[in-house]
Image 1 (cartoon, one colour):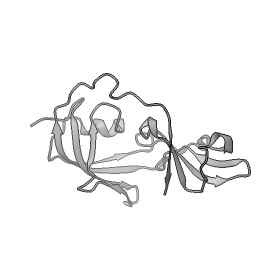
Image 2 (tube, one colour):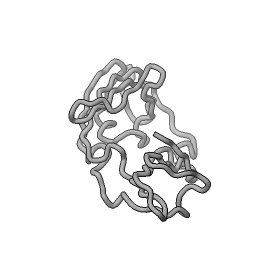
Image 3 (cartoon, one colour):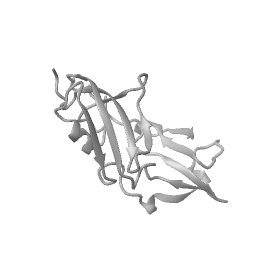
Image 4 (spheres, one colour):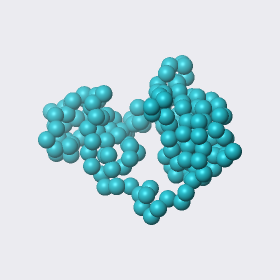
Length: 163
């Protein structure tokens, strides 16, 4: 049975909770967690905990803010003038602006509107929080070396999401 190592393709189910046990996110049978181990798609501390595991293994991994989504950084909350926001879009509070070509590496949540534009928060929604990943590894497939450019980032393009 294959153990989790670099470039293995992993399928797992998970439940993500906060320090109070509140459910923050979870996989479903239709949308399990899928990633390629060791390619930067997952949190490094979570990957380290999964290293060497096999299909059928279950584990709970508690991560501090520094290991997970970072501390809340006030300097990432700032005003953006209208000219620097996506053109032709009505900007609303709670809207998420994400540079889609960056594969979700960061997003900006609209937390306020101003006369000149909007107040954006670049912190991860879970920044500053201790979280626990409850994971069951469903499948581990031996990996392949990525083709040239397969993991490269694409140019930034705006994707608008409304929560």
